[in-house]
Length: 600
Image (tube, rainbow, N blue to C red):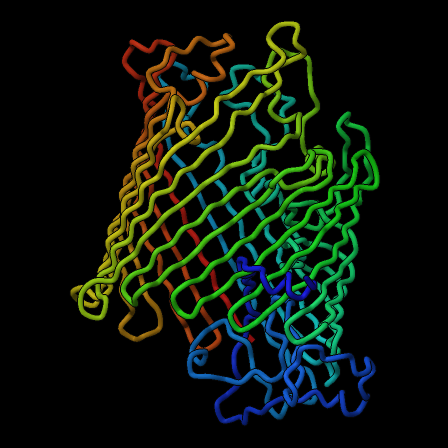
C-alpha cells in the first residue's frame, strides 16, 4: 500500500489554531482577488512537479498547514463582517504591497484572600494566603502578508507579563526559617515576570515548497515548539510532506529567561542548555477528512539519551451526521522507556438536528525530557521525608466520557445535556529518605472515580434572558476517590445581550461541597500510613457569586471584565477519627479580571 493510501485512511483530531486577529477594511474600498504577480514576474523557480492524482484541468492548490490564514485570495463574507478577530482581505492599496494586520491586548488580574487565625495553632497566623496574586500583561499579534508584493510573509506573537513579587517573610512560621526560597506568587511557569516570544517566523510560499524560519509550532507533528527551519512540500493538492529541525526550548516555558536554562542530569550533573529537535511526516487532506502522521526526535546534547516518538492526528466527517477524530503520541525510545504518552479518541454523532451524542477516551502521561524537568527539581537529601521533587517518572491519567444533548421545544428553545465520565490514575511509589529510618518508598493507591454532569438551558426565556442550571457530582470508586476527594457542585447562570447590541452580560452563582477520601480516618503523624491517611482529611464548602461583561466599544476596540466573590469553609478531622472535626476560619476571596483589545 502506498504512503498516500495509508495517509488517506487516517482519521484524527483537527488541530485548530486561532486565526490572526484583524478586520476587513472599510466597505467603500473595493475588495479584489489578490494575485501573486511574483509568479509571473519571477517565473516558477520550482519547476513543474508531477501533479500525480490531480484532476485534469483544475488548478493546483496546495494545503496550508501553517495554522494561520496566509492565503491571498480570501474574500469578505457577511458572517465575518461583525467579528472582532478576523483576517483582513486585500484591497487595491495592499495587493501589490504589504498587508499588515494584528491586535494589541492588555490583560490584568487580581486575586486576594482574607481569613482568620487558627484556633488551636494561632502561631501559624492567618489561614488565608499571605500574598495577593496580581499580574498585568500586554500581548501583540501581527501578521505581515506578501511583504512588498513578494512571496514572503511574517508573523510576530509576543507578550510581556509583570507580576507582584512578595517580600521574603517568616511571619507565623513555627520554625523561623530564614533560608526558604524566595516567595513567588502562582503565575505562569515559575511565578516571575515573563517576556514571551510565542511565535516569530518568516514564511516563503512557493508553488510546491513552503519554508518557515524562526520560532514556531508544528501542529501536525505533536504540536512541537522549536526554533529553526521547517519545510512543507506539496506532493499533490491532498498530500504534503513536512520536515523540521532546530533547537527545543524548555517545555512549558513562558519567557525568554526560562527557554534555555541550565539542564541537569539524573545525578544532578550539568547537561548544558540546549536540546535538538527534528522530525518528518506527512499530512493528507480531502473535503471530508484530514490526517497527519510522523516521527519526532528530541535530542539532549548531554546526560540523557534521545527521545523518539511517533504522532498522528486527524478527523473524518461523514456528512453532517458523524465526526470521528483522534490524536496519539507514542514514545518509542527514551530515558523513560516506550509507552503510550498521549491519546484522544472521540466521535460526535448527530442523527437529527435535535439530538447529539458524544463519546471520547483520553490519556495524558508525562510528556517531557528528564534533563529539562531536573532543572527545576530539588536535590535529594537523606532526611526521613517524602522526596516529591527529586525523581522524574511517568504517571498517566486516563478518562472516558459519554454524553448526550437534546434540543426541545419550538426552535429548540430548551437544551438538556448530560454526560458520564470515568477517571483513573494508577498507583505511584514515592521515595522516602535514604532508607535508614523509614522504608525506601511509599506507594500511593490508585485513584478511580465517576463524574456525572447534567445541564438544563433555556435559550430564550422571559425578557430575552438565557437561563441555565447545571450540576456535577463525582463519586469515588474503591477505597480512594479520583484525586482523593469527592465533590458536588451546583451552578445557576443567566445571560442577556445588551439592548444596544454591543455585547452581553452574564451572572452566575455556584455552591460546591468537597470531601476527602481520608475524612474520618485515624491519622497518626510520623507513621508510614500518615502519607495515605493524613494528607486530605477534611470536608469543605465553596460559595461563589460573580459575573462577566463583554462589550464592543467600537469597530476596533473590545473589552471584557469579570468579578467573582467566594467564601470557603473547611472542617479538619485531625488525628482522632472519633473526635469532632475542627473548623478552620472562613476564607473570603476576591477575583477580578479585565481585558481590553485593539485591532489594526
